[in-house]
Image 1: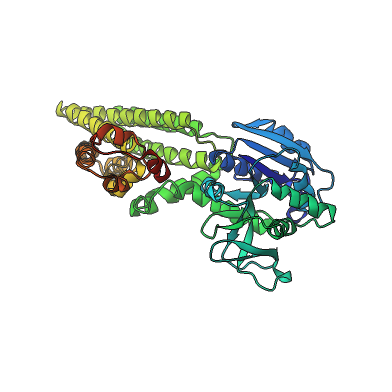
Image 2: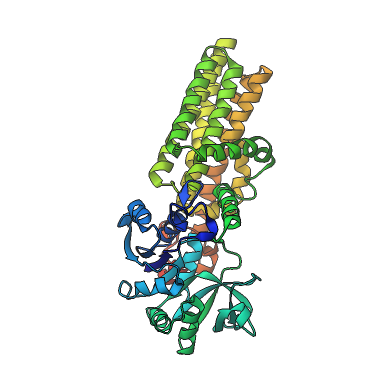
Length: 483
């Protein structure tokens, strides 16, 4: 599917930020607004974007080029960018000949919102919200989600929804755009009403509970900055994950650090390497008997690791390669710290038993991580969360373990974290293993699709093919639509 993006405006209400660049190139947390929109489109499966540019167009073209992260970009230039939205939209006539998504370049949406909009049926699908916004475009929506009237609220006798800046259109919509432009009517609601008047099927897509950010003025930028930052760390955690420990000892440190680092050119992999350096410093400190310093470096390692993920989401730098690199360095850091602590405690006590304790601490840590990833890979993250396993995992969180190391070293009892990690890590390893085989046994005993479909939410058909008895006939179409 194509996307038609309007990015020609000069953004006078955002002066002085737009004196030397288009509005869509204003950066929020070091990322231009238009780049955030393109990222969401890419994640939603859009392969081609037609961008209408005007004011300072060379800045957009030089930044994105003709390809951006797999999206083909076609530019259409206009010189009359102050003449209204439709004067820009009509430029897409000769570049789009199939169903497309129509957006303004100063809009930020979640990929999930775009996916759901694309799946809606209708000649024109218009995003709406059930709220009151003054001087907005209104729509009259019926019970079947059909729209019978669209226009400026002050000109409408009746309306019950606010129209957003997203629409999924058939090419026929551009005929309406052309008709309005030719008649001198350059407002977007006029083209939408033209489609309705021609008898096309125009439907409403409810976005009331979805993220919808449009940057019209400085207050919008401020609100968007806060919402984007909150999403960058909140989406990583479930309600159970944001426990009292994180609220007191993690977030008050990692969130300000994230804001500070976001203003620099540091990339997530830089922070990952910094966390490894802290781990090596902690190891060296433990080996030479400086347990307090080693404890501080251990927790600094955990905080650096907490920041790199937030930065990757905040700056749209997440990747499978980056996640793999981060995971490898995390495991290496854990072994380095535990290994150094083990040797330091041995030197303090001269008990060979400390090496056995350190071995079980590392074994439990690696085993817990491996079995968790194995479970999620086979059954899906949704199943993991459904079984409430994330709430039990809290006893083995790396930031908690590193915090215990620091506090125990301050208290002069560095053996305590070794005991804690050996017991908690191996307990979680056994627990995860029991759950793993428990789910396999549960699925293998099921005889109907109704029994196993709820368990597979968010997963794949791989588990069904591997563990379901041959007597069950799997409806592939139902499974695909369910996932």
